Image (cartoon, rainbow, N blue to C red; front, side):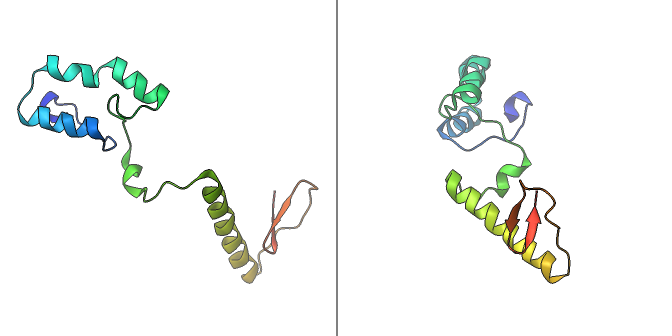
Length: 111
């Protein structure tokens, strides 16, 4: 919200596009407030309704390239852990299994 001297990163949505149009024509605070007010922010944060207002985001938002399912994410994490475990094993680094609750990943052990 450059017009209000309150800039921050937000996820792109129909709401943010509308806000850009309002700012471009120097809309009044009364026109903008229903979109950026606490009621809209609460709906975004608590209900996940991205069409209710602005969803604030940090710098990391630019690093998101896909939105996997939970299964895909877990499979990806496990696969990456196996690659790392194999690299460590190839370097002669492995962990001894000292806990019955440990799980093997590749040829290394993770607790």
